[in-house]
Amino acid sequence: MIEPMGRPRRDVKRRIIQAAALAKEAALETLWPTRCALCDVPGALICGPCRKTLAFIDANDACPRCGAPFGRSQCTECNSTMLAAAGRDDLPVTAMASVLLADEGTRRIVTVYKDGNERRLAAEMAQLMARFIPPEWSGAHLTYIPATKAALSKRGFDHAELLARELANTTGMDGSALLKRPKSADQRRFDRRGRQRNMEGRFSVRPDVPVPAKVLVIDDVCTTGATVFAAADRLLEAGAHEVYALTFAKVLAS
Ligand SMILES: [Zn+2]
Ligand SMILES: [Zn+2]
Image (cartoon, rainbow, N blue to C red; front, top):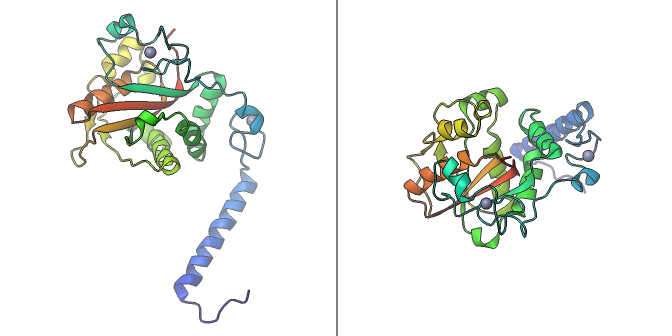
C-alpha cells in the first residue's frame, strides 16, 4: 500500500518511535535473548517442558481457607494449634490460595523475577495466578503487599505491584494500591515468631483511597501467612468485609 502524502507530523513521529522500540527490542533480544527461568534454554521465559514440571497445588485437595496443599479435611497450616502459635484464634482472611508449592523450580522463578530483574516474568506468573481465582472471589478489588523500602531500592521495582497490575490486565479486575508499609526489617531475617512480631501492625491503609468491601491481596510468596494476615487486619479495620489472598508460591511450615 502506498503511503498517503502529507501525513501529519505526529503520525510520522509515532511511527519513528514504534520503529525505534522494535529495533531496541530486537537489539536486546540479540544481546540478552529470552531464556527459560528454569533451564536457561533460549525461547520462552518458562519453556514448555519446564512448565510441565511446575509444582501446581491441586485446588481440590488444598485447604479451602489457607490454600495449603493436601489440607482439605485436616489442615496442617491453619489449624487451631498453628493459629494459637501465631497469636490468633481465626484467620483474618475469608480464604487464600497459592498457585505453586515453593519447590526448587518455583523458588528459581521467583528469584529470577525479583533478584534477576526479569520483569517480563510478571505476566507469565499472573497468567498462572489468574487460573487460581475461584468464582466466589469475583468482584474483588485487587491490591498487593507493598515492598519494603529496602527491597524497592535494591530491585528498583515493586514485585507484588507488578504482579497485581499484570493480574488486573489478565482478568479485567479493578485494582489499586490500598496499603502502605512503613520502614520495617527484611522478613527473611526472622524465624516464624519473629516474622509475626515484625509484621504485626506494620501496614497502614492509604488515606487517599476508600477500601472496597471485597479485596483480593496479591503477593509473590506466602511463608507463615504473617504478612498477608497483617495486611488483612488493616484492610478489615478500614472497612473491608471480606479479604482474600492469592500468592504465586506457598512455603510449607515444617
Ligand atoms: Zn525450561
Ligand atoms: Zn489451612
